Length: 145
Length: 494
Image 1 (spheres, chains in turn blue, purple):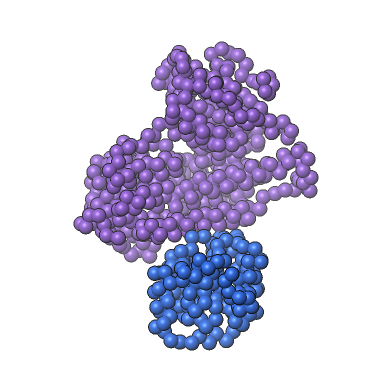
Image 2 (cartoon, helix red, strand yellow; image 1 turned 30 degrees about the horizontal axis):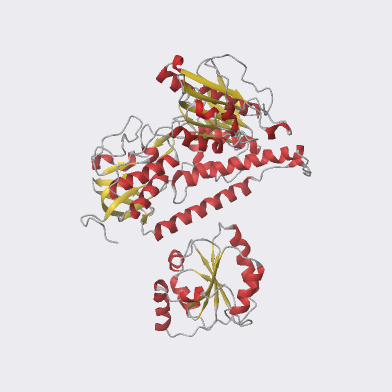
């Protein structure tokens, strides 16, 4: 959305996760491009924070109607791409991640590259915004403007 | 966050994560206290349970209002035709019970979640366990898996609320449901018997009937006992005119399950001694609520101020044990309403930790019964005012009215009525306002503030109304009961 989010990248709750990224020097070799369904913090660190590719993280809840529209849409747009991943975090199962990323409403979408938050939006946004974000994250468009 | 007083784990432990408990906890945190909230839902006899937030959020105000709204929308679809809307096959418009309950439950879950996130943000410790006292400062929380957790607190607030009471008749617990279950019922309720004519029973019978589920109500004594009886009569008349059947002076005798899966309910008319029975798909018990004080083991805490019905007697929310308090539905003699619990809980926290001294004012609390035609009121009923001041010292102004929007669809206006109960002597201070009509809750709210300011009839009739509304009828009151004049309106606007 705008550059403001960049400065939030290394705020204290993120520092812990960013620290973990430096400590673990594994390379992720996700051969298939299926959506990552995050079940716990470790999985998040391994597959999102430590991912070579940028990741769109979608905070989702089963009881949230707009989520039921957005999540399938994100899957549809991101699964075919091989330089961008999608991670879905169910807010009921991942209370700590919800707290870390200060998610106060769903759906929430956070774009992460190299372990840093580079963009964030809350609520069901229109197709243009979603496509824009995906294009930027997958390198089709230049960042920041 | 370290507790202010290092002797105990917490400065405040709140038993019950409902309206009162959470409001108290959140205000206490604002005042710098270290707070823990215990919340646990024992499944209903039918197995229903729910998340954090208490009765209001899960099985009370919120789902009730949503279902009431669903019922009103159903009625509106039919009225729309009179206004010119071309609704295809309007006679085949039906409610999909699963869609309704799913939408309602999804909303409730979102509130549960926001509540939990909020507690986490505010650093209030949330323990999903059933609390009971080990000693005056120690609570044992029993978690779902049976394990126990002990915690000590300098102050403790009992905000455990209540649950539906089940009459001691065969078949009650086995086959009947309560308000705990209706809002998440997996199958459509079908033909329903509602036992009880308090506001819970009437509201449920009201929306079920409007949604298309034939409803019958068993009334033990009078409907809406404790409320103004003339207004209660208007509400039940309206419901009868909409098709709800009432059996007055009847108590339930038994409920048995038939091979078809339906239920045969038997009742007894206590006046005529006649027995009655019928077959229903669902029997919903709404025969009162009881406070959840028994499971607290109050003896261990030294709290001995329980009333006959198990509620806590605490004028200023403080029990006989100075550091143990109570707030919400668990209190004896106080309105069992969410805003009352919230307000009292907040003021209590300010007195406990903020050095404040303001006490909760339980007088002139406005409320509304959300039957399809709603009843809103604030202040004294005519009976209460008569008892307190004597009929000679009162002046009751009243009127029937006709909402503008009702004409075109020819909606029933017979029960659109309002009255003001005031002192007879000038300037005629208003003691109570009563209104039956659409959006009664919205109408009465503003007047509640006026009553708090001591509004008089002189001031009321000198208030210029907003036209066309139903609320303006209060400003048009001019006929007294005493005069014997016809309170029916001649025309609008003059």
